[in-house]
Image 1 (cartoon, rainbow, N blue to C red):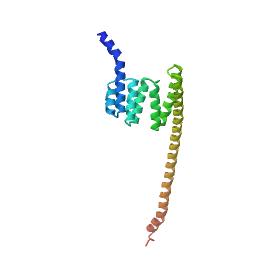
Image 2 (cartoon, helix red, strand yellow; image 1 turned 120 degrees about the vertical axis):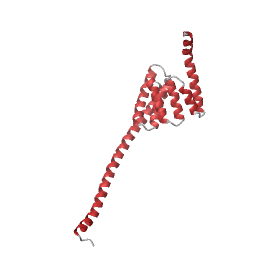
Image 3 (cartoon, one colour; image 1 turned 30 degrees about the horizontal axis):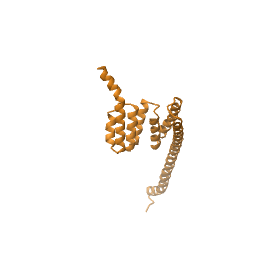
Image 4 (cartoon, helix red, strand yellow; image 1 turned 45 degrees about the vertical axis):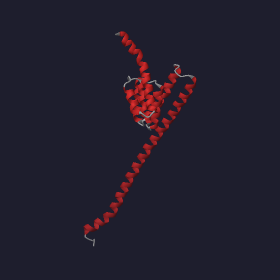
Length: 187
């Protein structure tokens, strides 16, 4: 019995890798439902969430892809590809708060990967540049969101003022006529 359990435990990573490859092939061929079905049978781990995020993005569900990437990051906060995907998707979706958070965490994850030797010199530069670029884009997105909120607030104030002016103008036109009608001078 224990031999069977040991064999199953040793075979699981190979099966997972094969299934992940099969899902990637189905995704590349545009068979998203098939890719999703394959991934549903895999254990809940960051690689499954990475693959799910890729399938959802390819199928056009960017919000779902971001949620899958974030779920994978809950399981492995240092997963660089998931961190990159979450940052990129939040930027694409113009979600300033999430983009800033994920870009900052990407920078930290790249530093940690560099420190513990998970990145070689060639990859390190590319990851660092991507993290810097995403942080700048997230900051720009936050500035734009702030400016947009200010513009909306100004438009609300102007529209309130215009409505008040219109009401005042209507009342000034109707008030003399109403006074004449009540005094009986209208013919």
